[in-house]
Each structure stands twice: as C-alpha cells, then as structure tokens.
Amino acid sequence: MIRTLLATFATALLAGTAFADPTLKADIAVSAAVVTVGDMFEDAGTAAEQPLFRSPKPGTSGLVPLADITAAAARVGIATFDTNGVSASRVTRAASVVDEARIAQLIADDLRQRGIMTDGMTADTLFNSPIAPINAEPVGTPASIVSLRYLPGTGTFTARLAIAGETQPLDVTGTIELLIEAPHLRASLPAGTVLGPDNIEMRPVALRFADGAGIAQPNQLIGMALTRQSREGMMLKPSDVTTPQIIAKNQLVTIYFRKGPMTLTVKGQAITSAAAGGPVQVLNLASKRLINATAISAGAVEVSIAPLSVAGL
Image (cartoon, rainbow, N blue to C red; front, top):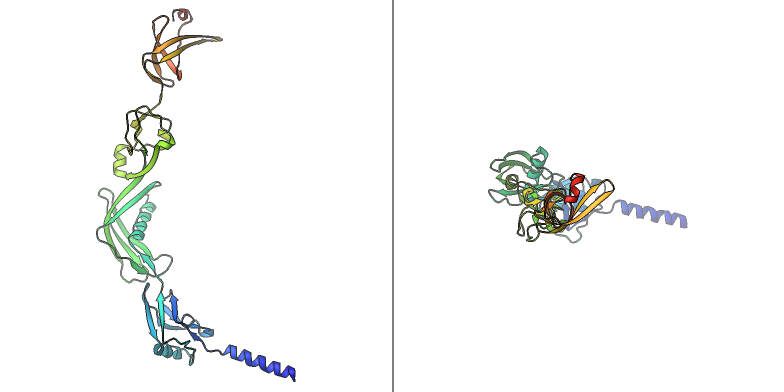
C-alpha cells in the first residue's frame, strides 16, 4: 500500500512539472530580430524557439501589452500561462554603436591594409559633417568599409560603409592627416649636451612636415651631442646632432707617441676641438711646436711621426 501511494505521488509530481504553465517575464533583453517564446517566458519548454514578435530596432525598447502577448502565445499553442502579475512586458534590443571613432578606425585599418599607413603611423580623421551615433545589429562586424577613395596629396577622402541592420549604406567625407612618431626634446639644453634616453620623448607630428624636415630615430640621437642650443619640445633631426667632442679648444692634453714597446708623452694644449678619432691640432708646451694629432680619449691625443723627429716634439 505504501509503495502504491509513493508511486502515485511521484507520478502526480512529474506530471505537474511537465505540464507547468510558462511564466511571463517583465523585462526581456534580446539581440536577434525576433522575440521567441523562450525570450518571453520562463519554462517555455519545447516551444522555446517559436517566434512571437519582431524585436524593436537595435538600441531601443518597447512595451508589449498582455493582450498582445496572450494572442501571440495562443498562435503557437500556448493556451495558458502565468502572468506573474505583469500587465505588459518591456523588450529591449541590444546594439553595437557605430560612431565617428569607430568609423575613423575602420578607415585607418583600410589604409593600413593598403600599405599607405605603416608601423608607427596614426591617422587624425576630420569629417566634413558630424556623424550621429548609429545603433547597429550587435554582431561581430557591425560596420564595414564598402569603398574608400583617399587622395594623399590633399588628404581628402570619401567612404561608403555598410551598417549591420541598416538597408541603406552610409556615405562620409572628410580629410585625413597622417601622423608619425618623432623624437622631441623634453627640456631646453645647451649646445654640446650629449643626449640620453631621458632627454627624448616621442610625439606625433604630421607626416608631410616630418618628411620635409627629416626624421631621426632615437638610436641615431642617443649618445650624440647637440650642435646648438635647443628648446624644449623641438623635433630633433639628424642635422641637430653630431659626434660628441672629447677634446675642447684650449684644453690641456697629454700627447702620446707609441713605437713598438716605446711610449713617449708630453704635455700640450689643444688648438682645435675634436671628436673621438678626429683630427686635432695641439701645441707642444715644451717645444712650442704645432702638431697634428688624433683625439683618442678625453684629454689625450696621439701623434704618428718618424722616430728621428720624436726628440723634436
């Protein structure tokens, strides 16, 4: 008897669960173009994939009255459902926003694919007319370039884009300023300053300007000396630097002469300045003779003369 009662109770419980009425939702979020039974109801069962209504436009929402929900549910075989105290359900459709920033990025990506933009370059895009944000379908590619015409000489462009969910293409026009990273001085520095990494920062400049002026790479500048006093924020060109001088004019130096195991030294004074390995004129302070030498290190020069002339140094 007990087994029979338990079996009867279990059967009734399973039957009640299997045929439980769907429960209406008050707030519904969808991404597709249609609202299904599963979107609208909890416990929708096998009818979950059945369409009920068209979704509102992407990025918008709307109220669906209970009477309309009841009629639509009846058409797909749902005669009764739990209203859950809801008199109208709000349906909100997701969207991907296509705005000026996204369109500008699409244009830049297209130029990069063509090889017009290379590594280290960016594009400053200015549209001829403001573009209001567009709510597109929330898909992987909500907008794409259909065609793009760009004139490098003037920087002008015309583009046509396809927007997901929109039947008409979007046409835009404007100008593009191509920018490239170029080294600039962080602070004002006197002539002769040897540049280190902390003296240089990269800033974007117009490509047309940089092409005319000439762009230096950081590895061409670090360890080099400024040829003139330079102001903060100045873009550095290859002509702005030179090999650092290790011998200054009028500096006291040591003059070296090496011949096999023999090395002679004498005190001198530089008449000209010189970089490492460069020629320099020095005055032998003992003999008062002017000597042509080579700068070998800070405060040191080397001469190469015939052995019999050594004594005359």
